[in-house]
Length: 163
Image (cartoon, rainbow, N blue to C red; front, top):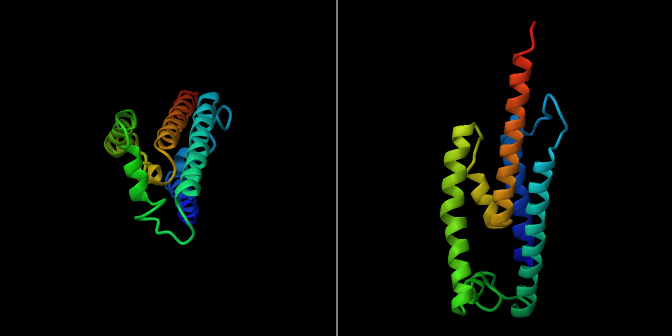
């Protein structure tokens, strides 16, 4: 259970680091509401993915780990968690797809696209995915993109106002 709490704290820490590193993105937009409906939808989806993931991870620990077990190997550990993901062909198909999305595509996309858009430390979205969920990291990144779009739109509107 301690490992789940550690993951939660590290996940919150990564999210806070992303927000602090990108204050320009998370500042209130010059025009319009603080959050767009699309941004809210991304946050709701991301938070739901974390809640579901932590629920199932908690169930895994309850079902497999005993008191004083090692979170790295043995019953209820990362090693067993990974092994159970490949327990049959259906599970293996899903896990390999998730692994490719999370470990290869998420960092490749967010790092390259993030630097192009001026997002500071975009690699933190991948790091956050290790402690939250892949779905949350994508939803959070897409919410940031929506906010950037709104920030850019507001800045262009202010530039076009005659002096």
